[in-house]
Length: 297
Image 1 (cartoon, rainbow, N blue to C red):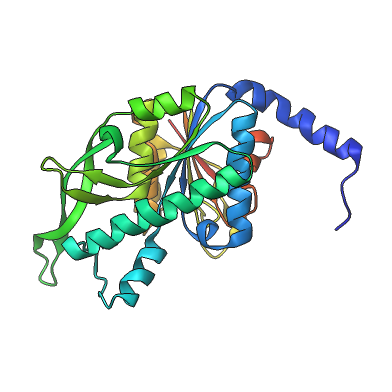
Image 2 (cartoon, rainbow, N blue to C red; image 1 turned 135 degrees about the vertical axis):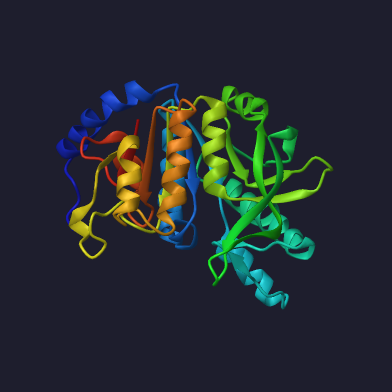
């Protein structure tokens, strides 16, 4: 592929200018996970996007997952993984591994990478400064006979309260907050929090302009076999019908529900983007065509 000309570079900057002006000073919460975390080239692209956003006056906040690394370490320790409705059953021993992997390893690796490419990042988990307070989550499971029972899935939590003061302080001092979704419970116990939900709750508490969820799919497809059937914009009012039709299904349902909760909490726009596309965040925020699916009120 030939290099772009100076004139083409200038045209790109001119196209981006209205968006830079529109979003300067605004907060964008990014849920970072999936293939974009494990592929070195995609990881560099995403984190470079985050640093660039900071330099043009946007305030990015990164909330990351780490499921594959947790599973890998559990295997090495001969601890078997079990899931209920897609949630990892987390006993006390597993929770120690989760916290060590998310807050101790992945979080600090991301911070180091961001600082190495010119950012000024600080790593946190939900336990720092009481950022996330959580309660134990229980899950409803339908049995073969049709009855529904409540299942204890251990130290899996749902956020009860967000105290964003520490994140606001970091943003005001031009830092990039990088947050691991581990929270404290009422007795000081640790809870594993779904990263999508953590990002959505934090976006509401910060009064964010945008919530961006990076995934391993193109967005919401009207026909999953046809990549050209991408639905660019989904209105909140249309979501129940799309779920009933089976267009929104499986793992996409909780992501869309997270977007709806963020919108109802005051976040202006939410986006489900394909993290496998290099610089997908910049394509969505700074270009006319955008990428992925935007979920709006």
